[in-house]
Amino acid sequence: MLAPSHAAGEQCGKRRMLLRESSLEVEQRGEPRKKGDLVVSITGRDKAGESLTQDALASSLSASGALLSGITRQMRSGDLIWIEYGGRKARFKIIWVRNLGL
Image (cartoon, rainbow, N blue to C red; front, side, top):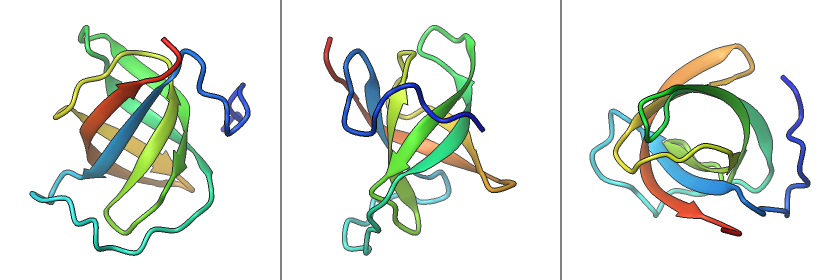
């Protein structure tokens, strides 16, 4: 995977998304979250229905979700995407989307 072209703290013109595993019905904020950033690959469809594959930065990691930063395309809450890291792939549901720096 390629490293993102922005520093971890920069979010100009990028989007952040909170995700959880698609098999869960309720977000569980009580879970412990781990600090640290991972570069992951995401695959899915953007808000316009176009195919999307790109690297993103995952942070605030828990057993059932993460916060993704650096998404360059518009996404929608409720959509499902695939996330791949370290040869493992799982499907997640987008919980919320926030446009930063726009």
